[in-house]
Length: 457
View 1 (cartoon, rainbow, N blue to C red):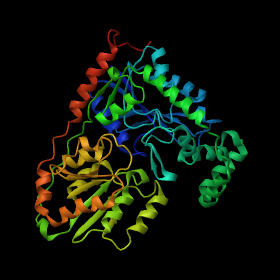
View 2 (cartoon, one colour):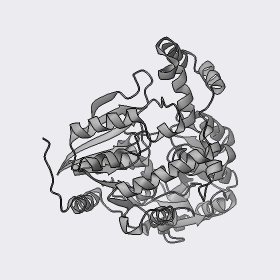
View 3 (tube, one colour):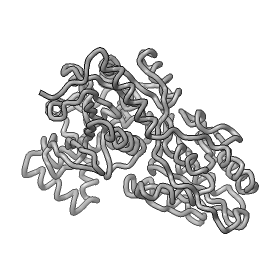
View 4 (spheres, helix red, strand yellow):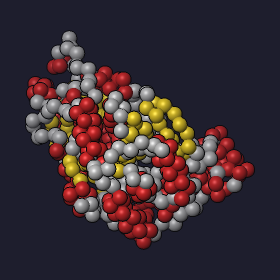
């Protein structure tokens, strides 16, 4: 069987949860099938639409450069240039099954193009990219708003303030619409004078986006629902929300992520009572992950504790700088990002993981990783988090944005170290990536019937 995994970006440069899961699933499946990964990449140093082949830890990765050189909002999800390159990739890899993880940076037309070629398609619902044009988290950062419903007017405002709109403006300065000579000058400015480039970017006119444009995109997303044979949501929360948004319930099933084995926690010589409670955050340092709520809660804590924040401070430097300023004077350590080889080291040095998300998370990978390392979790009561964290069994839940409630839960753990160990002993088992891959193979076979696995001609 030949399987093509499609995702908005990929390792090693991009290391968020969906990228890590797609890599681990593809790597496990590659033991029994021919597996390819299709991903987009942003690289203004080469022409928009360039196709590059590379390898990552034994996986063949086909990369399409998407520099967001789009004339209008419609092209951000349905681009003739991207569609032409996607056809080339499908013809070159000749998959039996297309496994979609994310269509952002690619094209909403990819499943339909695959269907025209007789290729079956499945999808993992990691986030809300299909219905949220500003990145898939359903948050309007400029207005500190979590979108519990899809408001086209708000979406239109939000897109103009998003990093995706910024990429479109940057494209005008670097290539495509700006012309060759101007494009080279623009790229040189970004490289040698980033502050000046940012100032110029702010003066560049953003793409016009209306509420009608957003509604048109939502309508197109519903066509994607019809093009894909089977959807899998890692949480009931995600499945129910997509059904509410128009996905037929008989085309979606719930099945959580699988994970590779981990190294067990080593026995510590130092008594837990004798050292500070080690509180951790692991993830992307971005507003919707709610790290600022965690820092605010930390300021209210009494007693011995340390807060270890693991996340790349260079991805969203302005937000990271705000966090550092808020954490001044507190026992907070910014650990930056880490390689996958260090995952066990990170969790083995934590007593409790905090997942302070503000957006409706799916089934956070970090919670599963914490459970695999016998670490209790304190999480926001949002999205799929309550499906994993059971109050006073393996952790605590609190309402998003409520730093007082979060602080109260953490204070209980600071004051009662025996409770920390009790919660850790009760963490549930986590599905293995091997079992997950077997389940996906069965789904692939199911959507292929009655068609047979075909060979390239």
